[in-house]
Image (cartoon, rainbow, N blue to C red; front, side):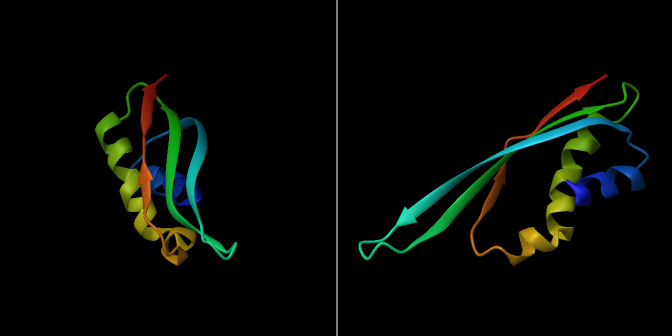
Length: 86
């Protein structure tokens, strides 16, 4: 979220609200160990009415590239993005 808000600020997109839920796929091995194999983030963003909705959508991918947490993960992260205008 912080990387996304930073990217929006750089592009003069005013974020009114931001919420996110995440789902993960856990692989459990026969020996009881496990690992996460996939995460899906589902951000719901409301931006100011005169903002560029398409750019706001694309900035999620730029933010993902900047995010130190995402860059530390060993599994794919995918998005189901919702952008609304206020």
